[in-house]
Length: 467
Ligand SMILES: *Cc1c(COP(=O)(O)O)cnc(C)c1O
Image: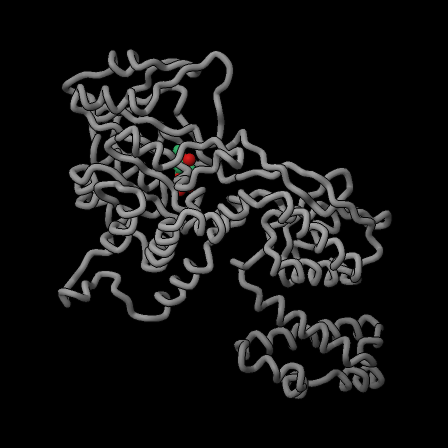
């Protein structure tokens, strides 16, 4: 027993360990409680081992310090963390949809930790409106008469319907009763808004006459068209052009609402993306158009409502406007993003979503080759091949347009690809990859050139370390 007491006495004391140089380095950046907790856990573990008869831990002080340092690093990891998207899905819903441009990110930083003109008019020296911030640039870029920004397109749908159609009917084609992920379904949003859904047509065919017959002077509040963002109905089909609906709306004096979803401002048809643009929608002249900020627009999460001033004014005055209003960081990013569209070629280059979608094969190949070289130099245990893959726009946009992409395919006889995929998710800089036929596929479309080194680092990190 005495013997055991002597051994236990050799366990380092918490206060002593806290003085170790490697831990002192954390003091400026890490709460003391986090450091103390990590030391205590390591020492407790060491004590348990000794009591179980294993005293090896006492001999290796470095190992103990390694353990403490990695425990501190683990505890310091944020829940919301940066990752590298090597999946080839550009608007990856689970990975945060659109990546902001540098300019938009910079605008957020400028506004985040400073005072701002959020609701202040510098010329008048008096109160301003946060809705004015983005309205002028959106009007300039799109030519729309008025604009309002809310939290997302779901909120936009809700406030449009609540403000224009509460207690009355909104006529929608049966082919357009969209569900956008989990809880956003047109019929259910309609119900929550207090509007009454009036379905017309069949799943595959709706004609202008269907809208016409559904119209009732007393009960019809609006005609609504919903873009089938994340699916297509093909075969024996027919739907009504937005312009025909607008014409009918004018005739009956009923507003036409177009939920277009994607918010595409650049024409991507020459890149094989056949999605309607905001300009196409404006040409058809509906009364209200709504779309997301973080889909093909490539900005922050938000719902952008553009259209006729008399309708937008009703929404701005609606009680839901306060509940759905966006914060200054969103507005900063949104203003900066729209500003970039004043130069369309620049927007295509500098807004990451657009740049990734339109990346040429040459660019992708050069990146894949460079990554292969860099990985091969550090990790010769894998065999490498650059393979063609099908990438996606994602985020419920352009569901039928696959993009021709390239991936670095990596194979190792002695380690299952699933295991590598799992370990890559748990590194300091997680890399999200795909696995196909026991190959790890590092798709390069959404990996920036300045991230290649980080990918290599993460691969190096998982070599050796078990998890
Ligand atoms: C994506 C989408 C929505 C929902 O937009 P969020 O910004 O995700 O709330 C609504 N309608 C359509 C047609 C969409 O494509």
